Length: 175
Image (cartoon, rainbow, N blue to C red; front, side, top):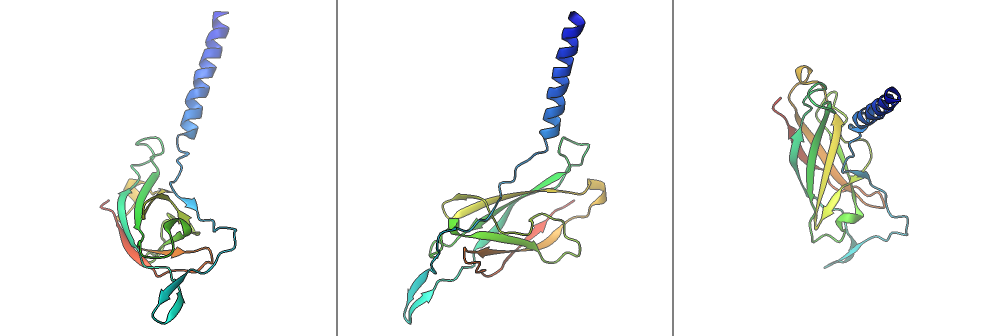
C-alpha cells in the first residue's frame, strides 16, 4: 500500500512540476488587437474659422520605457523571451479619445527585423491620456545576437481606418 501511495504522490508532484514548467512561458502581452466599434461611426468635426472641418488623427508622443533582451534559454525558464515597454502620450486637445484608436508599430530600418510588433493595430492599458504597451517577443540567444539600434514608426488608426501621421522612436540595446 505504501508503494502505491508513493507512486500516486510521485505522479502528482511530477504532473504539478511539469505543468507549471509547461505553462511558465505562456506570458500574456499587455497588448490586445484593436477592434473598431461595430456601431455606426461618425466623422469627428472641429469648428474652425473656415467652418466645420473633419478632425484628423494627431501626432503623439511615444517613448521607450523599457527594453529587455533575452537572458538565454538556459538562464531562466522562458529565457528566450524579451520585452519592450512603450508609452504613448495622446494630445488632450484632439477630439479623438485614446480609447477610440489603435496603433500600428513597424521597424523601418532593418534588413531582417525581428518580429516584435505583429502586423495589425494594437491597444494597451490606458491611464488618462497615456497608454502603456508591453510587447513580448522571441529573442536570439545572447552569444548569437547583435546590439539593436532600430528605428520604429508608430501611427494611430481610427474606426474608419484613417491613419494618422507616423511618429518615430529608437530601440537601442547594448548587447
